[in-house]
Image (tube, rainbow, N blue to C red):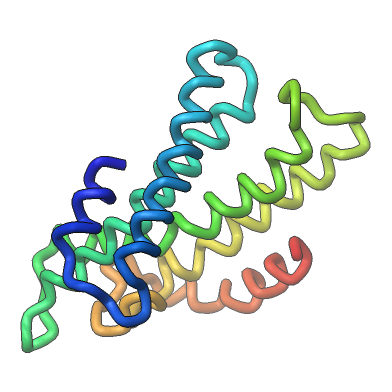
Length: 173
């Protein structure tokens, strides 16, 4: 949270994302992580606290990848650490949001499902999240979020997973 607030003051004003928007975003993610951490420290067996805390951490990691763009030189090269950071950041946002939007309401307030009949929703959500991340994680060529950088972990066989990931995303929505 502190680095995001500091970035609000340090980064130049972006026309598509003003400083006020970054500050509000920082406060939202920070409050998500704070509530998650409070629940985890008081009730460590309640999965809601873990979901909120991990989601806030993943969203923070997703925004850190934007700093990787600053490391790209005029020739389109970037240090290995920046490329890894960009790769990692593109994998974090969708699982974090899906966890908060789908899993938290299912488990609220005590961390248990209303009935065992809801397990299929949890299984479908977790499976579709896992399948939807595979093409971004291992797809060859340029990364979706950072088209000037090639995927360092690209595998040709993962390109075939794009259709399966699209189907999984369509089922989960």
